[in-house]
Image 1: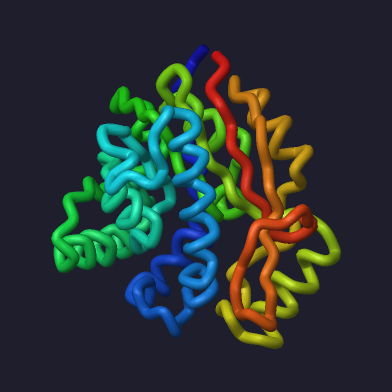
Image 2 (image 1 turned 135 degrees about the vertical axis):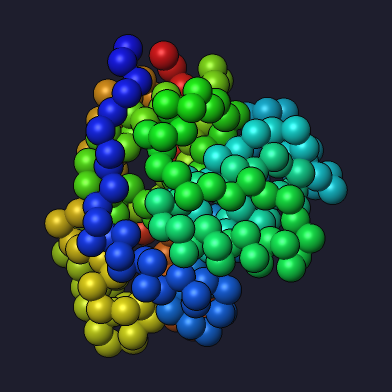
Amino acid sequence: MNNKVTSTIDPDELAKFTAMAADWWNPNGQFKPLHKFNPVRLAYIRDKLCAQFDRDRLADKPLKGLRLLDIGCGGGLLSEPMARLGAVVVGADAAEANIKTAALHAAQEGLAIDYRAVTAEQLVDQGERFDAILNMEVIEHVAEPQAFMSACSALMKPDAIMFLATLNRTLKAYALAIIGAEYVLRWLPRGTHEWDKFITPRELEAMAETAGLTLYTSTGVSFNPLTDKWRQSGDMSVNYMSVARKTA
């Protein structure tokens, strides 16, 4: 298989997140929804990684020794907890401003994380390989989702797994994730998401298969306004997370 692919970076999306870079670690800022979302996705990632690699999820550092890529890492909201759990983390983002923010915060926290302003395609060209990849809330922002999925697949070792989180292309997702979150509640800046870039679970599964991956489990993620918390649910009509295993 030819692993060399063209760039999947969308210049407009890159500019959008570069402009917000300084606000990543403000829990009440533009990334407040991700701060609220973090506990449920961190628990999901930890538990699935421990199951895949036969680790004790209650151990102090259950991910010790696992080499993990956080692609589209932003300011490092996932990279830092993964490092604290013992993983050897590479955080990659095409926006240099994001990487500078992430590296500065990690240094302040005393965490050794290998942050790089690179694309998935560049990592493929460098011959990098990982035990696990976090591909969270990224694929709906790239120019060529299938090419991006294939580049990520090329970065996976045999038996590696990749976590994917994205938004379903439904009217409910349009109402809640765009009209509600961006215009009514103003949780996110207007224009953060584009509905036509949302990906259905069936489309995600097909992309994974084309890239030599098997998408073997998925869960919906729902927000409860009464508790002000996110939780895993059977409802995949808006936000959902999936895990794919390397098969080729």
